[in-house]
Image (cartoon, rainbow, N blue to C red; front, side):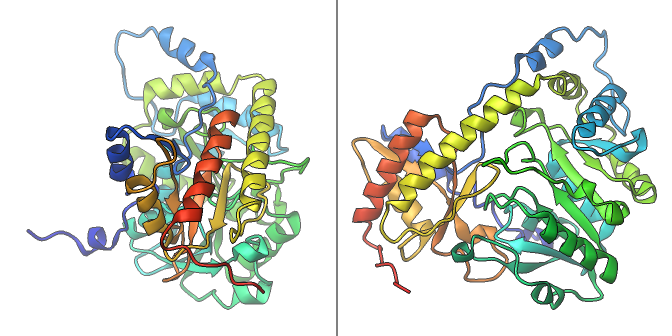
Length: 402
């Protein structure tokens, strides 16, 4: 039977495609430390569940295509803390940030149009672009350089008449990169000069460490009509299963077009939106405590990795991921070997292979993404198991000294 060329071209998720190996390892009695997926173990605020328990309607009906008005109002209030003043028409509720990104790409790109993205990047941007037959043009950043953006001239060489947008994940998944205001303004200048949009994926906004002051792309007034912010309750409130996100933009003409996409899928989930309204009323102390917890976990993982010979990583400033270069022949083979062959007292580790986070062929083959989403004791042990596995992996290569 014949299928579309689009679906053949779409890559499998590097985050989930090795899941069968993890299941097999567990079936054999191994404990698997899951560092491969950004599923927080932090408790979801109880207000979410309370709001759903108290939902008292005779019919579970469709909601407005634009989103629950109470949720939109709650988001408006939330953004005031970031000095971003919004109106009702600046926000559209989506089924997670994933739907928001697909809607943004659909509204901005015709088949064959180009989207700039610093790589490594969130792996699902690849299938989202394939979905609308757009082409990702990568801007390569390197682990050895802390995944910092290259010079403006290097970025500008990637721009063509078909460039429609640049995606900036800030803080970054998988790198934990937090962009400086200077870098953000460089991107804003290019967007004005070459007439393209900035798709700002800011779902990890609350997770910025070491006393850094977060600046949103929504704070750049010169380009506010070119910025689309992707947001979500998933990571902020440890509510990944709620599937509630939003698009935020002050470009009313563009939002008027995206409304048609919202209408085409009728509405975002009614019950989840009710719970999300309650989440936005969560005390700031919850987010402050979560921030401190993730910074502690980051420090545990980073210190452990820095003590492993041949491993290269930089301390991330945000989110809860690290992109790590390993002294191995092939990171995916290493992960599979850890799940199938390695046994550290009945325990092993699962990571996400790095190659799927790149668009440039061949890059990331010796890298993995680790998510520091386990509590302290588990994380310490996971690092011990990873170190032990690296020491005896048959495909280990010695680090090349500069």
